[in-house]
Length: 386
Image 1 (tube, rainbow, N blue to C red):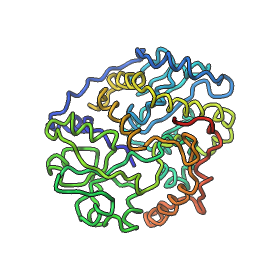
Image 2: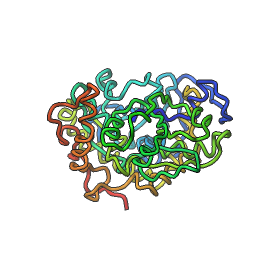
Image 3: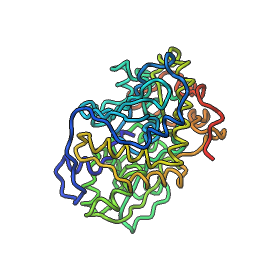
Image 4: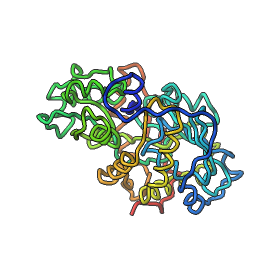
């Protein structure tokens, strides 16, 4: 799903009076970030990468810093530099001998999808993509997932009317309630399978929470369980109460925030990826065990970028970490390895998406198979969550 998830950012940009926390001022130039994460990175991530990987490993995210990318920030060594003009943070990749550059996405790149950025900028080695996006773009912008940080997608449909009590997507569909969402490929699958009714889908969602508040939570809206529930309860003063939700990942097998590579780069970077991907695996395990240093770095980075009001807080990120664990969003793969893919699950996803994508005029590559879009070749089978 396109990440239109910034409650504060879009409220500030639109000048909405929702009683949000103040919209931050932007800063420019390059400056160092004070972080405790660097010490851990230097100690834990020591695989020699000099001469094997690019001197600077560039990772393109699909949004501002957030809990989904905590493990990537975990890899930054001491004294990372924030470039507010370029929306990047960079520094040593642990003690590997090369640097890491993390690029913000979404509004920072004019909402260009990561698959398009792969082709615009050859410096980008890795990017974060939802697997349904990989399938959708497999014909014209092919890429390959190399690591699945999320075992279950954090995508949700949420509502605020306490009289509503949905437990499945089909419950939402039967209700006929308006479902506010962007123009997403998975919707065709949900409608085609009868889970939602086409007539209830409103594709006008732009990330703005004002309509949800104005209608007193009487609509169903797309969002992310690691973000909106906390913001609505704690940051949006005109709401300031819990919401209910159904997790899409309980019924729809898409892998979210897959770490991916442009397809033609897999072979040429095979040696690099074999050493680099396990570092990302280990960083996620370490981040879940102690997220605070990387979270503080992301808060600092975000405070120095012109995000039109998008903000992070210790409470928001800690809540996201808790939900990642308690809801099983981050878990070992079916083979017991952290970050591995289940080929049968991917094949099911291809099958569910193909009819709708074809009808919409964006068919996947002909004869698309799981091995065309995912690989577990570079994953270290010894790394798992305890």
